[in-house]
Amino acid sequence: MAVVFALPVTINADGGNWVSLPALPANMDPMRAVFLSAAAAFNVGTCTAGQATTNSGFFHCPSGKVSLGVVNYNSITVRAVGATTISLFVYHYASTDDVPEGAG
Image (tube, rainbow, N blue to C red; front, side, top):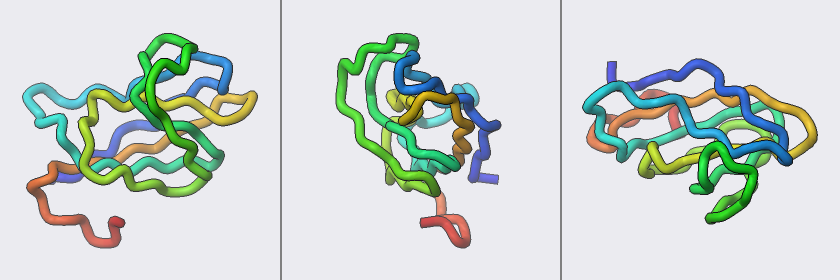
């Protein structure tokens, strides 16, 4: 199956470190159509994972499902917008695959 569903990612609170998305399986093209979903607002960007510094671009995502379009999956980092950690759900597929039913 082309669509890959990752286990929920625990995102640090806004004062914590940026977190990478779950690693891709070996030899998988990192250019992916990526969808993220969370019950609370979060930030997504290309900041350095494992550091609290906002050292690169990011944007605010409201709660719910967000489509990033086709992006370099390996460069994405996330962090919660708020004082608590939240769970982020991730699914993605290769840019050459057909769009899954109901996606987008």
